[in-house]
Amino acid sequence: MVKSPMKKDVYRKNFEERKDWYQKAQKDSFRLKYHIQPPMGWLNDSNGLCQKDGVYHIYFQYCPFYPELGSIFWGHMTTKDFLHYEEHEPALYSDTKWDCNGPYSGSAYQENGMIYFFYTGNVRYEGDYNYVTDGREQNTILVTSEDGFAFSGKQLLMKNEDYPADMSRHVRDPQVFRENGRYFMIQGARSIQDEGSILLFESEDLIHWSYKLRFQPGKPFGYMWECPNYLKIGERKFLFTCPQGVPRDDYEFANVYQCGWFSLDYDFKGEDYRLGEFHSLDRGFDFYAPQVFQDEAGRWILLGWMAIPDSGYEEPTLAGGWIHALTIPRELYVNEAGLLCQRPLKELEGLRKTAVKGTLREGLNRETSPCFELKLLMDKAAGEFELKLRESAALAYRDGVLRLDVTGCGSGRTVRRLKVEELWKLQIFSDTSSLEIFVNDGADVFTTRVYDSMEDLRISLEAAELLGDWEYYSFE
Ligand code: FRU
Image (cartoon, rainbow, N blue to C red; front, side):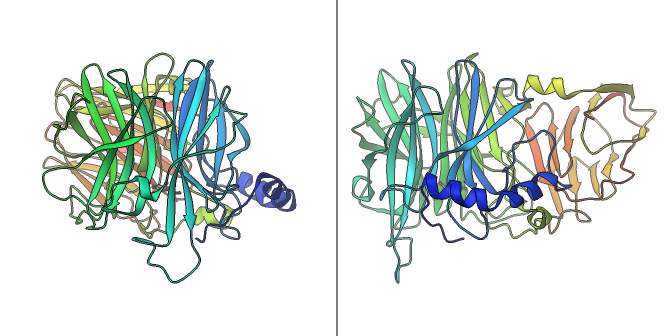
């Protein structure tokens, strides 16, 4: 997609002229019922996530006139409860010379009633460039807002020359936080030697930044790391990132690009730090560029992009005038084993309309609408079983491997597997064209799009050996 500039007034004119595109997208049968999706056109990363005066602001990479016009914006939705969403005009446009090919991803930092949005201004030169070591600017830009709706002018904070000398032209996706009474910013990066890392900058005033160090494991791990996030739960510190260029394998790195976390041991003072092992955040086909933020109640909430760039799957929603969505909101917590886990946000219990419960031994075979939640609660670690979630989507557990097969409805997506020694809980969120499967209270998750028929949908489970209960909640 060629990314081109577009100011707010030109966006409005284009939108007026294409209102029928909007209507068409809204009516598509694959339209999700409880996920954030583009009002029309294209969506990717969640951006600028924050809560201000009770209102959650969810911005996202948005290209409403895709594929005709490639201009990228920050789309904008708000919610107070993660059940009802309000759609707004895009928040940021490509309207300065520093971001004329798109306000790329960025995040929010709040202090003294002000929201500071830091993002990457993408500039792509016309000409014969390789666009890795030349041909583009990646500007770090600040805009502020008191309410998440009205924004200050854009201020250029850093440009290519301000990044370390061995960086390629891929440095982006800033996140800002405070530690030890100082401000820190992380950015995803690719060096000219094709090594991915997270760059750390520091500042005393949020405006002037100086490079401090880079986070990198002992040996190279991919050529580019996108979308870094830092978070702290209790005393535990974590770094998230999306490494590109890690060799694929069957179990651990089955997708074209990866997304996961490292535990971080660092005091944000000297130069010494230690990264733990890399843990994948998702085992399905469609999860990338998640952003986390802390809400007013102190919860760490994650919203990911329910897709992976360059994955090559077909997306039948395109015929309906839209493509991609965000995941359900998930709360992060650390489990007894010290692993960072994701659980569906408590508010989503508000989606439940009717509840049915039974024992696993009896099995389960029922008609369903595509929008439901299903829980399997095992009394002791599960033996073999097969759970059919739709005509062509099944989850099977055998010999310590949990296997998701969506070959028949995945538009190119096939099988993903996860080794799970002891399986004691599954919690599944199904929407018209997505599945999110939380394993053992979110120690692992499978996120995937599915494009099965929605007629005569049935869930069935054969599990004569399983002890425990199931709970089914219809959302419609
Ligand atoms: C990740 C990403 C970011 C970039 C944005 C552009 O999906 O490539 O690194 O800022 O998307 O849309």
